[in-house]
Length: 181
Image 1 (tube, rainbow, N blue to C red):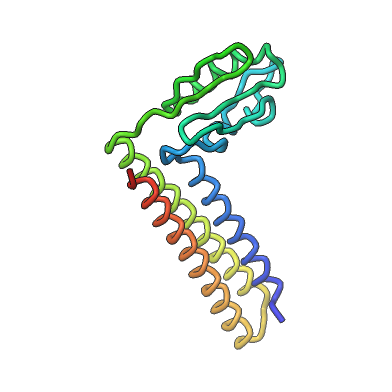
Image 2 (image 1 turned 180 degrees about the vertical axis):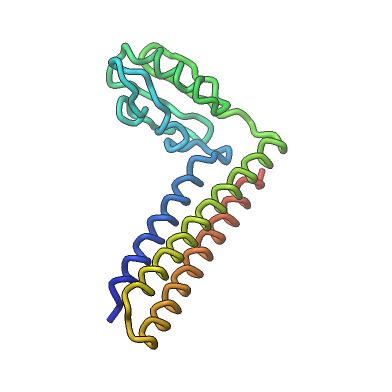
């Protein structure tokens, strides 16, 4: 039977890994995905909204993102928000649609994205290590029998190693994807 502290540590580490993987998905590799633009903040109806909350985002082909606002009056604000987000995209307005062609990536741009991926991976690893530290503190404060506390700390470390290995494996895959032309 798993200890509640271990279960909590594992679920928090899984959330940290999932967050890191989501951040990886926002780095574009030359293939269009809706996640590249869905978190862009749009000035709509007097407030800030995520793009995915005010438009349908699709990818008709590997080099194009197509955005169809639910309200035709949002076409210009969405195009402006994409430009303001400084993602390196140049949106084209086509009546009630916005087309976002992906530019060809240069070697330097690919290297920048690899550096960004490494930074995001390190942030994820730091999150996981912070969770480990917090959970070991909780274990010490729980006043468990010494052998149970040691076993729990060992299990928390095993979970930490697994989470970090998962982040590293995904980083390697993302780096390979970014550098392949």
